[in-house]
Image 1 (cartoon, rainbow, N blue to C red):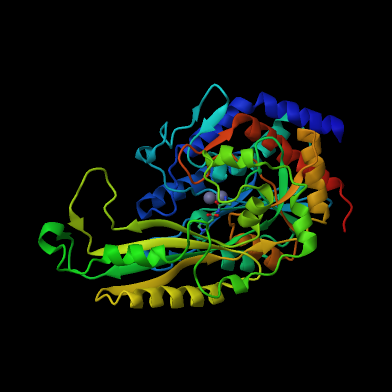
Image 2 (image 1 turned 30 degrees about the vertical axis):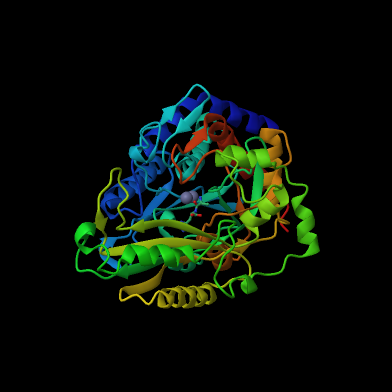
Length: 476
Ligand SMILES: C[C@H](N)C(=O)N[C@@H](Cc1c[nH]cn1)C(=O)O
Ligand SMILES: [Zn+2]
Ligand SMILES: [Zn+2]
């Protein structure tokens, strides 16, 4: 295999400018799934992937998912499914990624235009979606192109599933995967997802766990319209005052969730589990670098990693309807909608968490004795996932990391969520591996999101090498 991989690697290096151009084109499409106005761009991004794949000879289908739940005027973006190769003598690997992105505006504090790929002298490629998840998704397409141009036989049959609603809770995808497990995905021997990040900036990892995510809205309304605070301040009960107090009751400064009963849903940490954290290559400096400050809750790596992977967290995200612009507008908002999410871990179940959240929010609001109206609801939810890394899928990826990066990867879990991971595992009955491309400083979801050129190009080599090693692994 060595000469074949070497030719492939050489080809990837030779095509690196083309691959960066492909990423530039993808970043230029603002495929923001959370913004209804951007839905045509999400669809455009799906079509871009479909046409790139067709040009390389893949069989591609753009599958509709129907109307968006609770927004019946909106069509969900299509799932792009594709197959490259159909050789009964080869293994079949199913890869998943998403082509939608988080919202981004230059005014949020970006140093460059978020939807223009901008490369600095350190090889950092800035742009929304560069690391999450356009770079890794294009990686698979680049991998096909480099094999073709190098004249190296593609080592496996590749099935692809690229969705456009991941950043909005993967609306509609669970049913699709379940239905296609015995259809389009029926030949899959294993699944690989490239949509998370290294723990630091130097050492690659393979990931076997994710937290889940329950995302909530609290709406508080009262007045018929926004009011002048000079006229109504002191005589009207203000939704904003109520929501700040209700949201303030959810979590404390040290991240302790204040919802009674929530901690009892968490599986106890075993001694064996505790011992795993010490060996992981991670330092508080890695955290400070990616955090951009030293404002951490803990001072040691073990508790920091456990807080990220092993325990739930509750984050407050924003208040819709609140005055947030610069200046000093003296308005009383008539309706405000607070957003928060809980990252869930074993053994927390979505419905059990909902019940505790609703009970707590309603009780806190009742304490205020407000005449305003409260409505609390779940916006979307995705389950946590923990798998066994003792499988040929992980062994192959481990060998690929050693070949490309010259080190053994750490086995990690991830604090973020990829809701369909568990669905893929349960629906196909196959092992799922998370193979990250980007690093801890990539600032996914944040301003100045980037992917290092090195991670992109070596990441394409890694994806290809993984497929070659998969082809060699004995079945277990
Ligand atoms: C880890 C992955 N790249 C990611 O960013 N996932 C999102 C998924 C999500 C869940 N609710 C809303 N989006 C995340 O972890 O926030
Ligand atoms: Zn992602
Ligand atoms: Zn994301």
